[in-house]
Length: 192
Image 1 (tube, rainbow, N blue to C red):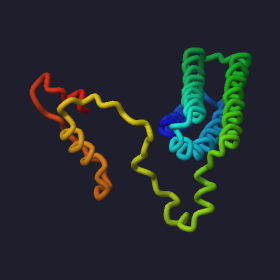
Image 2: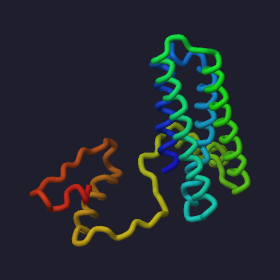
Image 3: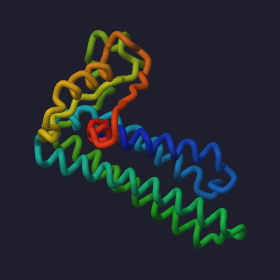
Image 4: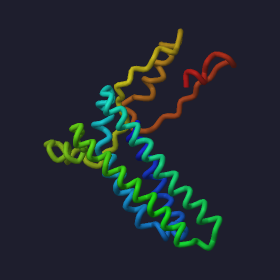
């Protein structure tokens, strides 16, 4: 879950750098460093997600998610302020530089925790594996999570199993569009 959130934030920050380059010019270098740090941190998240049943890892992943949201919020806030105020002051730019540096410092602290908790980077595991050249560059389509979902569907289990079967079909490389149809009140939204 944290890996997906960090990926989304990295994508949004990268898009902002390309689309709003003129507005972000004052803090562009800091944002590029932040994106690089988030990408580095993201390599640890698959191993951390696989250990989510450990309390300390669950807390660490919550911190990662919060940090990613904070990074996105700071950049978006800077964009709003910069677009509304044509005359950017050095004081305002420095304020956002300091905030971005603070996020980078927090990322360093979290990366130290990854080492303390013996959480490995996917880059380390790819280097140590013999088949690394085969899996390098391929995206993981499905993630497994160790959180057990509570039983919330009563009488829908066959429908849920059918829907999940369609969604996780390994033989199909595309992303299917699945329609859920029926009368009002049957529980289509709950099922979705």
